[in-house]
Image 1: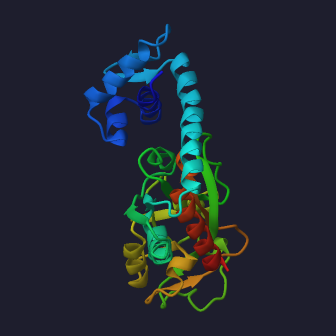
Image 2: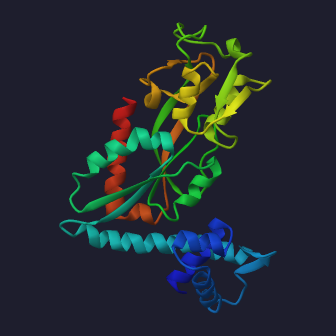
Image 3: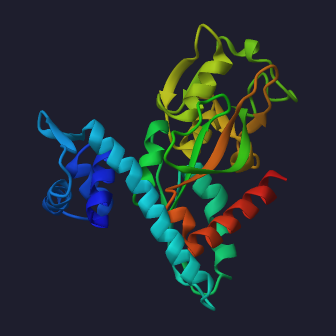
Length: 296
């Protein structure tokens, strides 16, 4: 079996078809199809099947794709063993983060990794729905993702490195009736108008838990926390904002909530094979150390 064919099969399973796999692998759809065809010729059972205009893995394809992960990990471990013996392992590491984590973590990460001779870090912001973060690991080495405190764990197939827990506080205008409080009970917020992120994003899940059975009265759906903070500061609603990122933001007041665990878990997600690379491990170590400093 060809390694490129196994990678193509794995990407088709992760991204739901040839087009998504091609984008993740930086190939044309035709090239992905050719790799799948070459792989199919080496086995006697169908690995993929047509569904409408799309393509999905068969049970055999799923089994081969799962085994392909172990092949990729073994290859990267072999490369890492050779890199460990080099005086100066070099390479480029791609790091992405959702927007507020990018603000919180990326400047410090770049400052720390600038001291790593021969290691280049390329950053991007990727703010996606909760269930879309794992798929980003097919094209990004280290994906900084978040999930609610009480959320489900990340699916099998990605390496998860916990970074920190960031509390989510109630954001208020300085003129708000509760702005002078040291804490607020969520039951006092029943009639409030909320500025919230779109459904499917982790903070929306936390807000549902804070609001209780009747749910929040959301008047504005804003994913950019800077815009949300501006609306709150101008008196156009209240919001949940992350404490470490916005605790010193001008024009708003952050007040902790009582009686409810409001926060988000920030994790680094990696493909198991890429997690074996020496340069990726060096960057990840710096990211973990930075997160510990922030949480402390």
